[in-house]
Length: 387
Image (cartoon, rainbow, N blue to C red; front, side):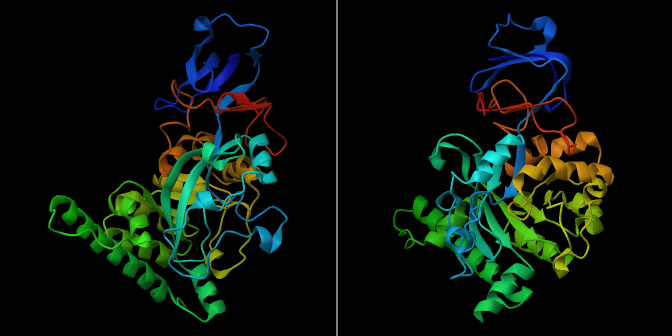
């Protein structure tokens, strides 16, 4: 397939823009460049004259297919609240790939979602990155499985504890549950490593919760910490520093991040902010503002923007960037926040997030501004297939 006569926003390392260019692809991107280097095109190729091509959009934090669309409790698979500590739960076992919202996402240009359990538990399980269209078998749509462990701080774990009259009832209790499980996993890992190096030392008895945390402690995956309030953000930082994964910590939602942007920039901690389209529905959201993204940009904090679907429907991800632009975010940073910056923060930039040779052929074509409420994509490709 060949798209030609397009303005191509590659979002590559040099942020190259081909004012009149082409892109050739099958499942992967094969060639990209100026029209003077374009291969001969046929009637089956796509003349995108007057249009812009972007990498497929990425929602870096959502729960698409987790809280079933219009299903109520029967489709509610987001929180296993029978146990406050469930690092062994896997997102791939909870997502319904036939959920209508995947279609709505694809039509809006969102080609990849980072998806997993909710924030009811201090440790809730692992996230996956997946395409919004493809095989009805979810295993075939996953880009990266078990790519982050989800932690949660603040009101949500406390509310679950209160409903059950069980721990945690306080922020101290939430931190203690997380710290206890990380200590267990750390000692478990030490024993595993000793047994691997010394045949006289037995492997520890299998512990599924500890096993699930080994990739994090080994530096192989990220920790995604649900935090809104300033104190919760720094509790997540404290625990990450204590257990040696501060370089792989990502703060999710980060409602108060504009208040501590200089500190986050100094610590080099990335954040995923959102939902942007949101009211102040609980105390933790008291400082919610559509100006947050612009403040973070000015202070040099790495960030991406999410919908937290179904809190905000996933198809409104581009519109979320439009509101942030209205409040001070640059247009250049806005597109990065739902493409390459989102991919890099989520650890999936090797295959998605920019238009480069060898990457997945996920493309979105617009005739107008991607962030405009009146605009919808002209065409969307996922893995080279027009969807």
